[in-house]
Figure 1 (cartoon, each protein chain N blue to C red):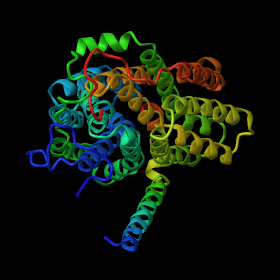
Figure 2 (cartoon, rainbow over the protein chains, first blue to last red; figure 1 turned 60 degrees about the vertical axis):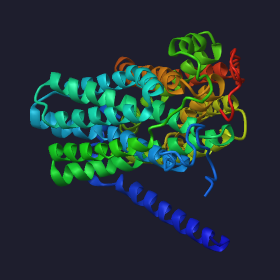
Figure 3 (cartoon, each protein chain N blue to C red; figure 1 turned 180 degrees about the vertical axis):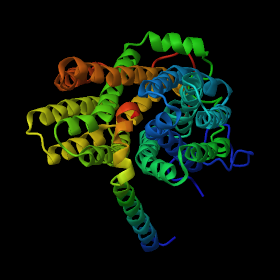
Length: 44
Length: 417
């Protein structure tokens, strides 16, 4: 595979991974998860 | 195409039936297994409220079952590792995944505390023993060159970290959408995916370092090395700190007058930065001294916890603390497992890693329990934070005399191990 294509696919992959991590991070702000904070205090 | 990163074990020639088990495939499968296993385990706490509400239990019934799970996980790890070393990791991972699935399914239909203890506690704990770090790291370790091993272990560790970070909101979404019983069955299906992946992890390892050694001899050898004891006790400290912080940071934030959102974001930041920390220290372990990096991690924890205690408490300080601790969170895993492989060889790596992990779990048990007890007795977490700092100083000192040289045995020097 040509070098520039390799860089391109790595870049796309990294961007998608970053977007996924941000989405998951936002998932932690879900009201249900906050309500269940008490549960985490018991079981981690 | 030559694998760019890893190497085959000597008994896997390209023409053998195992040729499709490329090292990169093994690493990818190991990461997915750790993501599923560690991530789904992490959702356990989310079931406290719906289960206790539906079944009329008090919280002690539920938390006791999960305390049993943590202890069984730790106690089972050396045995799962020994079985993996003796009979092959694939069988152990598949059998453990089955126990994990059955445990989650029975948890969904448990109506008594004893049933919960046996399902969520014993069965899931045993399932975790064979599907987490000790066994998976052993397989990956056996398929990597010494130069790339630490990086590969770091990538696998980052996989487990990603699971802890990613599956928690998914678990909550499942409970909210389908109810807690259906969510448990769906999570059990997720664990079931581990079984076919285990096929890729079925490794032969007759030609690795220490092939002529028995398990008993490996135990005696490791027990006679101070470095092994230093690793065990430093890992104990790691378990103490991570369990204490994960369990008590949210309540610490709420008790200090902040909203629940602050503590939850702190947990999310720990999970997020944990992924990068695991990878980063795994990579660094391949470049420099692993024991020095362990000293750096435990020393940095002293600084981070100390600064958190001394600085005025604010939302920013909680989040900075969480991000810094996240970087140092499971960063000890690739370094500790890498040191075991480096010093004691690969033949019984899973068993020895399992024993050291038992130390981690004992520390976790104490960290979770003592944190609560100290708060109940004194009305604050100050003493628990101080204890964490003191233990971290001891762990850093314990890592200093670790001898990183391979133990000398009366056997021919193995190639590539």
